[in-house]
Image (tube, rainbow, N blue to C red; front, side, top):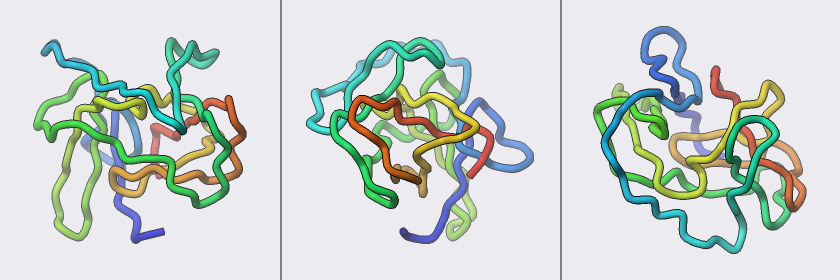
Length: 135
């Protein structure tokens, strides 16, 4: 995997950056949850909707890229990353299926920048989860 960039969500811009989704924001956005041969959205036992694997993923395998426009304000599906190389905080307002990722203290996936990789084997129909508190 490439060098790590820290991610932050839930508006936790201060302190330790960590993968999370920012709350707030009221602007209406158009979803681009296009059908995917590898992922789907379904009801989650963790919270609301979740992102699930249609196929299995092996450790270190690319799952996808968090797509959406760059933003400067928090929102319900904004993923913040701290790019240490550039020394800047960047946010993207999720428009693809990865915006449905839920938190787990034992995640099976991890972001490197806006790119998501499997941490361990993920079986078909398993929910894909990340740790919102940090990478």
